[in-house]
Length: 283
Ligand code: PAF
Image 1 (cartoon, rainbow, N blue to C red):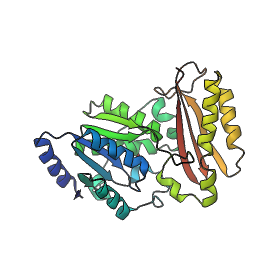
Image 2: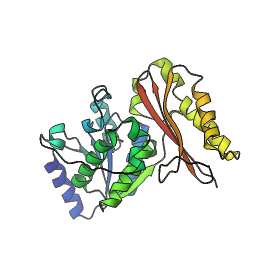
Image 3: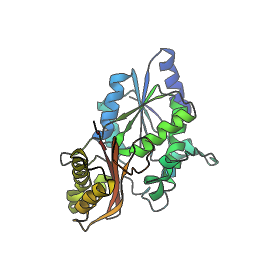
């Protein structure tokens, strides 16, 4: 595994692989790697000749007080995992490499996909994501890039700006990887207390109950949301940020469930914010 800490170095290494006609797969991460990340890396290894993983805790996607400092940094064990997986390049830039002191550019995606749900709760978040992912795509120029469905809105926004800016990359969005009790894997799970970790899967359980109602024929989103929230309010520790039933493409809330929908939600457990979603196929 080659480790590159500078943009110049990673570009030079990649150009050597590209000269040999290798297909480059890219998995951007903020580290603290779990099975969810590992599934993306395995998919890249299967599909591409060369797999590049970046680890960079991106400050611009955290507003102040949103836990940038608290974000778990586990570089040593991450490196071990990546070595075991035999990835080709680990790109490990620091803040100065990625932003310098004079970065003034934003990549703004408009519309409901940006301004709803996570975009309301975390107004700066997606601007930070679009900026860093655009930069990483410009630096790595991958043939294929891999993202997780857990961050469904992020994946949708990345798809949009890749299309709008004619960035030449194929995006692959892979299914959510869950713990045995259903909790979606996330770096934030390690921050939960033992008690809160035990009740954290309830968002997924609520979504499963909602999905069952839809499959049983419920078409009123309000009824489905009531089922989900009733499940969640059993736990006084849970603060619901939002739960919604949306069109998976437009991210608009649906008025009637008559086609595929995405149940999507975010909760707080003692200030730790957890997100999850569940795709309900009507066919
Ligand atoms: O999903 C993440 O881990 C991050 O948002 C990403 C895409 C690596 C950008 O920092």
